Length: 238
Image 1 (cartoon, rainbow, N blue to C red):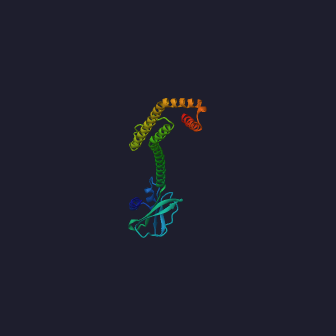
Image 2: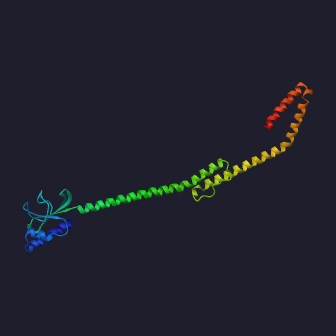
Image 3: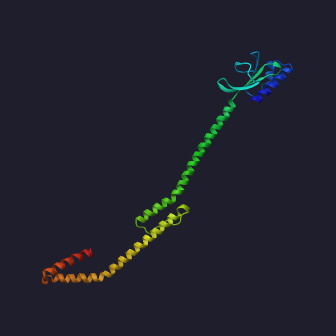
């Protein structure tokens, strides 16, 4: 903005040197920009660009040959640069509204907000996918444990692709293998014991039945012993 104001001051001085009036000099400088230009000499405005808003020089002349500050044009923020002209021609004030800058900043803000929103959504989706991927082996582990608890001892988790859970799954499957083997061993032992005791038990039952039939010939002590033996035998059979 200061460089543009210095260039404008150079163009103005050149136009004056060519014999143009201050107003004509400012008119020749009018271009596609939206800057308002004023020429102030001896504390009064000697020329202004066409369509320029009202202007009060304020503290004049400025303390420095080139000064810049903020001001407002029709309620909008603008930059104001004052450049001292050559040969005591006064000062050139150039005010440029920041409309385009504000529009660019607004657009940039909207873009950044959009990017932030998209990033947040993408991050949430990625986190959800990652959490599901991490919890999937644990879910499978829980389901298999529930099935084993229900009696399906043939169920196993098997190898998983997650390296951190591999030791857990191996230990779990090994524990189920040992449990299954112990249950089968106990079942075989119970079947063997039942088979081995079947014949003696049958003989013992027959003997007790025979004694019961001859109960009247037994003395009181023998009858008590027979009753105890019958009760224990009945408890064992049930």
